[in-house]
Image (cartoon, rainbow, N blue to C red; front, side, top):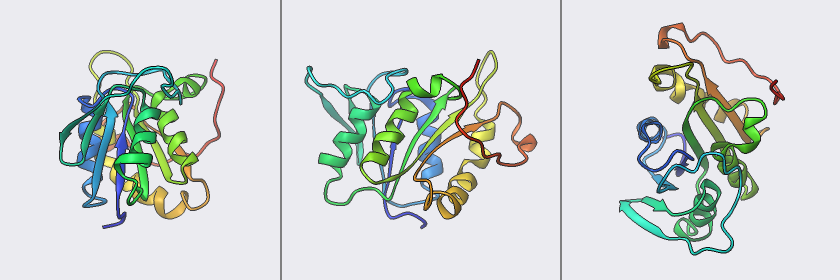
Length: 187
């Protein structure tokens, strides 16, 4: 396996289809997968942490926990309590329903969780699946995410420890190449 231990989180909630897909992808990368995700959709919370309300953690299975707080809360709880004996070698946040580009990246709980993981010293990747209208297709992410994470971990993460990846809204066969860019401002 490529990674000793992986933490998965998101901002769409623990029962989101993107997180279920990410779990499947992560099992190709490690045998030690932990899921610590919000119990409900917490989109748009950026890297906010809960200060004035109690956080509740509910075990949903082996190494799987739902948290009453934000994605950032999930990462903090995982790093400081649930996984304190051995922190993850990689944190994957997503797969978000919808792209995180431009200004909205600053508000994204998916990206915020990856940034908090980076503050704890973990390599992290925020992953999102673009959709244009109607029902979302996860085909691009499902087909290429594992290879993308492997490539980024080997080539990019040693230098840039926090990344934001957006998968295109197209058929899996139409995904051609990775394009690296700087954070944009949108319009």
